[in-house]
Image (cartoon, rainbow, N blue to C red):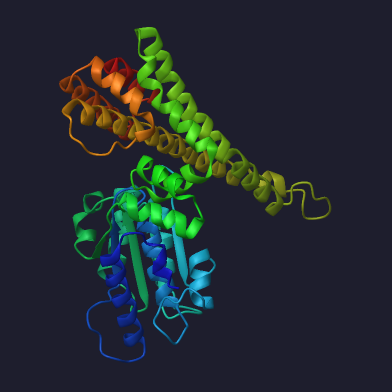
Length: 392
């Protein structure tokens, strides 16, 4: 059992992080450093590769209290770090569209504190690519002049997503997309998924660990996928293409609402409780009036989170469509490799016979252009409508 067991198909990364944790323990014990440990880390890799899992695992290994190899996964230090309760491990999860300078300053302030329970003060910034320029410049100071007990871990899709001055001062940990075989085996071993279902989910998810787990365990996820992949059959006319585009956008919005509504309500109830809403007696009359600013900020944060959630749901749909047209191209070229959406082989063959490889490449370009447009804040419906018309 090790905290690094969660990393699938990342043997090189596990070896690197294990060596770093061992070096860190030797340094704290007064031994000689071997250069494996550093104060700033940058975890990169495609979505679903496990960037955040790798950072959390290293944080746990650094706080491990077991006398054996660091990262046992059983001691209080490991357990509390992994579940997010360790006093000296902060997981900064920005679910909004950007991470602002005020949040960055809080990160800097926290990283300067002395550890209270563990050996290090660890800060993990997930989705570090969302830092604004001002936030990045603020974080840069901590990277350039780190306190001796501080460890900063940044997670981003690629090195290009961060300022050159930041990435040049970080130890790079590049993760790769797990192979379908490795992912399927892990789903069977860890989650008890039947092998054929695990193989289907691993391939359909294209190596994305969280999505593969959801596809293998939730019928709703498999239904959503099939509905998305029915779009190529819904492009008979301009009207049906536009209707299909609207349904795709609406489906992403419904998914966002389903995920965020219970959470939004719980956050609002917690805020009202903190301000004494509904409580009577001396000293509570001003409470509800004083919470107006807090409610405004909460609603702003929730709106930003909902927008980000819709974008992520829509992007997952576009990735599925990309894989479908990739399969069409495979059939047209007679490439002889496995299809991503093997369960839709008949549909793939029909589309492949009805068009040419050149047309399929144009469709792939249209989906990629739509993803770029969404990243650049084009209205989702307009971007998807333009894509649907090109696909038609």
